[in-house]
Image (tube, rainbow, N blue to C red):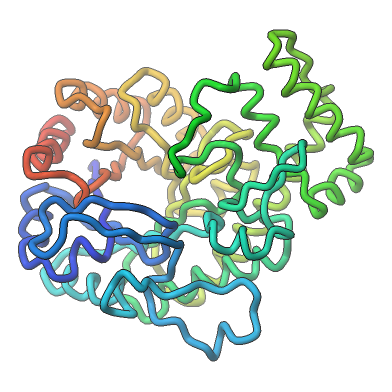
Length: 377
């Protein structure tokens, strides 16, 4: 049986007595609710008290306990744009009180505030340019922070499941600050610009027998070659060492996070945002050789209503775990394309669907959730 989950933020639920009715009308089986989340400027078109929430920084939407965070460089902040220090807890209580199951939505390594304050643990490309929004999991300090963040996000929460996003390394792609990079790089150039070249990653290359300066030079040549239409990809042995280093760090991060989650929320089902492309960076990181065995399900990006999305679902399904297809009713999605799109994803192997986004969609898009339910029926 295909199941549907609708995504939401705590501010969508808190203060809106009509939210649970809209959840029922949407026909979703559960709500995936943000417990830790990156910065965002979010529309709230149906909320009775506001139209917009400016979440200026990444935050933990649970009480921040000084007893566990004291003395740490990497620590979360409370959301000053909400009147409560436990936005997730209050929203989850509203939903579960209405009989709606809740999954905790946790974003880990996407944090611009921490990357700016501590550039030594941020991703750095081969030209020495930092990506402050991206914390690099090659650093033990980052892994420790992410594991504790995950545990605190679900501690004593009424959750039946956890959806883990950005459990790995982010790369060149980032939507923000009036982004002016669209179309500047080929897919290959984006791959090489997404390789982290921080001190910890360079040390990892060295353990694989490669001189870090040689690797960096090869990456720069590859990026410049793409820009001039003269591709010059790094030799296979260098590329393999770079990917093996990243995957090793991702595996360490995931192991620490999952251990912490299972201790904090025993029995909760864990879904990981992933991508069958082993080179993928971002919210949905490349699936490694051991990823699927570690989690209960894989959530994959499937927003574009194209055949490529079905191929991503099929690639994830080949790993032998249930696949959750992430689809959106927001622009540029066309309503007429949605029914065929979700049926195609189901045929490719998706048995679950995560729908984006219950709080961002205006009234005239709320019916699109029903379209998806009916198409899958």
